[in-house]
Image 1 (tube, rainbow, N blue to C red):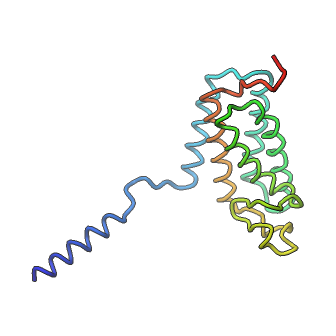
Image 2 (cartoon, one colour):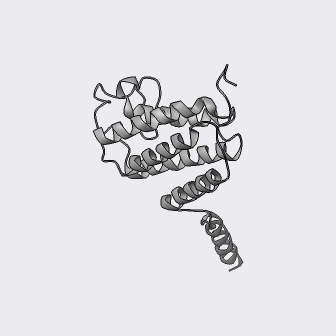
Image 3 (cartoon, rainbow, N blue to C red):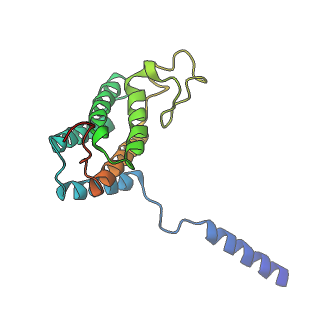
Length: 175
């Protein structure tokens, strides 16, 4: 009898220890939290030059990226996001730059399939394991959930930059 009670107690302890404790969030909540953090951060800063306009264009393209249809539309919008990130990265602080560079690789991998050698996007195979048709739609197109996650990660990195150096790092030779 005592063994049964002990076994039941151990089972209940193990089962309750594995349950989520309120730290789980849906993907839409994660995206909303990242957007809100970015929106709160952009209000209080004055980035240099035309950075605010570049950020507005980037956000518009990221929102379009989530809603884009798989295939050519995703490729075009990912290309726009890539272009804007490439313009902004030289102005970022040294701690944010690697994170934005990794995100840039993901967008670039979707917009330029011919350059996919050597790296993997969030859900795509490596170039060595992919078939010759890896640049075709399907193998590398991200579903809506993966695109939302990529955009949420981008908003988080942009918010981190706005909360620290605010895109005020000047390119080499500029003063």
